Image 1 (cartoon, rainbow, N blue to C red):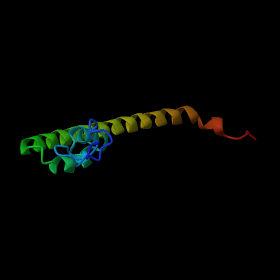
Image 2 (spheres, rainbow, N blue to C red):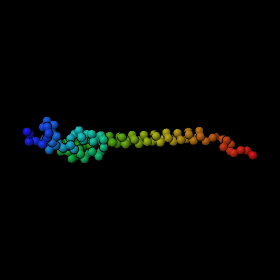
Image 3 (cartoon, helix red, strand yellow):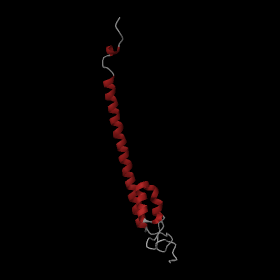
Image 4 (cartoon, rainbow, N blue to C red):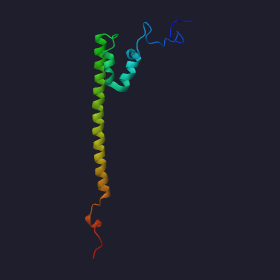
Length: 109
């Protein structure tokens, strides 16, 4: 029997085993979190001792650049949708309201 607490030593489930990183320092977890929560995952990058300063700065610059580009694109998209909505409402109000005021008048007496 093995003295290790893992049920199967080949699985390496024990995070405190020598050479095993905790889940929050795993590169795959950090990459997934950057994709899901964006800039909120940057502290995991900066507190990771396995990354060099250049790698931390590079990841931060890339993440901030992507977030900035997405923000600009979203603002542009909102502007386009608001313009199209305004033109749609103008067209709709012209179609619904008659052009001649006599058409809405009551019966002539």
